[in-house]
Length: 441
Ligand code: SF4
Image (cartoon, rainbow, N blue to C red; front, side, top):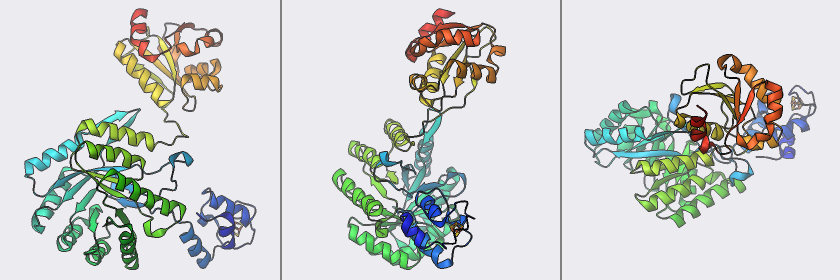
């Protein structure tokens, strides 16, 4: 991203304030910080707009595959290290099938991909893409396989085929799904670029030599094909880490457009592949392709991805609300916790385990956990009372009792004064809730 002074040079310098900032320099500073849009200035010249559009383009191009509700966005990253800001577009996971499988084997593998579906802290974790490889060398069979897979699943597709004639037929047949084409190499680059251009589908460029990858990017861009993905083809962990880091560092730190694209990585089968995949989630893989994906590997990979791509400055939150757990009636007690997602789902799961009916009041603490919220003044007797009043909790439960987290036992007196309810101090750890709740009944 250009600096404020570099941006200012291209602005009209009228200082008219129509962009809602008093001067062009103030507007330039907002643009440099991504807090304003170029379109907010109605007086931009075409030349200025073009100059700024190219200098403000993201260092790594955003590439989208698929259409409709299942699109996958890759790239558009701005950071080398997650702690500097955040990573934006989660690594996509693809499971590979091939056209030499029988119909039964194909359907079984696609079913397995769909079954890898987990829920964690209120979010659904799943695979994203099916990759279809041409192993038969038969164009008709490959297209038939693609059509069959398309009927089985509406996820985005990767078409994996190095034969330019077969790829051309397949890409043009599947173009409405906007699949990713894998891929071009130094021998077939011209034909593959032509197919990408005619079908409008993004293209993967493959080479284990980063210099050759840069040359291939140049060839594609000269033909007007900009939606590119790079496959640096590492055979081991060392090569993967080295090549991915060079690509990311060149794009982010040096704004080198020749490598400013998302990264595709094919993962080897087995334990080594799992280790490489875990590393690739953290170190710049945009799309990982797997030949096999047992659920014992899928869960840790999906959880790691969720953790790495969650904005560390914005805790995952649940809606403040009075949640019925285990089918409570009017004689069920009220418990409260905060709207930090991890806290809520841990408490919820422990209450469910107890099988004791409970009204669970979630208090808005801006996503902070119980003790942090209390220490920060976001969890007070007044905020709990307000939450109970807003949800109508006292109309739901006539037990006259509020169970509070053991961590904030010191709130008891104020809470009793504020709510008029009998305050019962619960356990400090959520894991002790089942035993505690059963003992209350
Ligand atoms: S609207 Fe354009 S010309 Fe007017 S102050 Fe803003 S940037 Fe300057």
